[in-house]
Image (cartoon, rainbow, N blue to C red; front, side):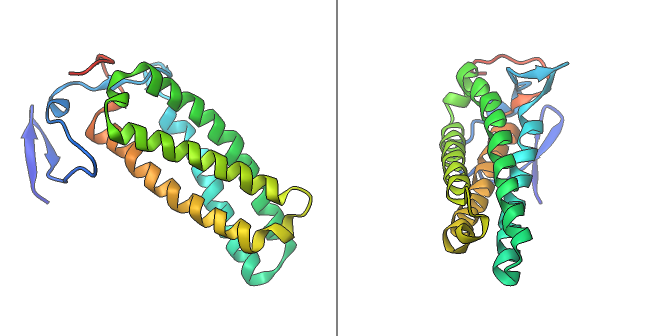
Length: 180
């Protein structure tokens, strides 16, 4: 892969999905508003909802093939865990969105936020329809919603990576929360 030099550090010539500002490659980046010892918490907090919701899709699919109630019950609890941990990740991410101007000026920031809010709403619906009867809700709507959530999680992750790696938001380092 071809690279370009920026202040001694090469970066790949990958076209941005939405937009790019070459000035951002030359600045130190923007630190997160929610961090411990300078380490941003949002990247850590998203691991749990992503894992829970991805596994819920897997357990829904296994239930579809086996009809074993264990997998339907597992899906329910994974979706509940995904919703609770997703709300925590959303609070942290929303703090960065509200307090870092660079996030609000990027369409990737808005896409990431809108998709994540949609994910939380769909996850809440998916959990609600399963209340009281884990098995009956899996097919077809539980599996359909889990598939949509899994797909949107990947799309949102792409935009989150755009914010971190292309626009240098939520990085470790001394930066300004304003434009470079």
